[in-house]
Length: 103
Image (cartoon, rainbow, N blue to C red; front, side):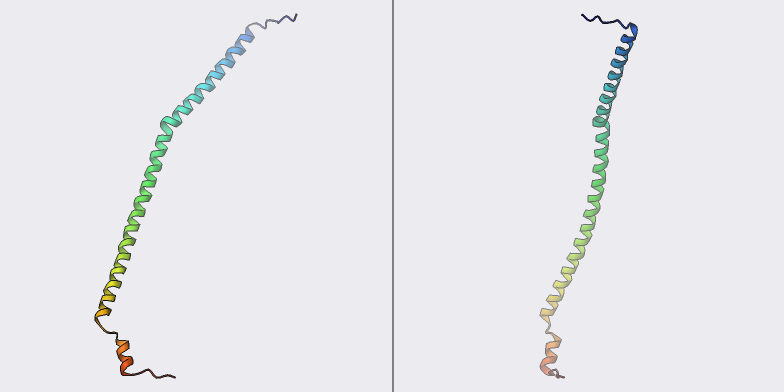
C-alpha cells in the first residue's frame, strides 16, 4: 500500500490558485463573447449598412443621370428620324439631277 504524503497548505493554495485562474479565464471569455455579440457586432453591422446605403444611393443617382442622358439621346434620334421622314434626302436629289462622275 502506498501512502500519500500530505503536502500541507501549499497543496490547497495551488488548487485554489488554479481554480481562480480557470474561473478568471472563463469570466473573461464569457465577457468577450457577450461584448462581441451584444455590442460590437450590432455597431459594426450598423456602420456597414450605412456604408452600403451610401454606395447604393450614389449608384442610383449615377444611374438616374445616365438614364436621363440616354433617354435624351433616344429622343434626339427619334426627332432626327421624324425630320428625315418629312424631308427628302438632298443627296438623292443631287444624284438624280447630276450623276457622279467616275474617275
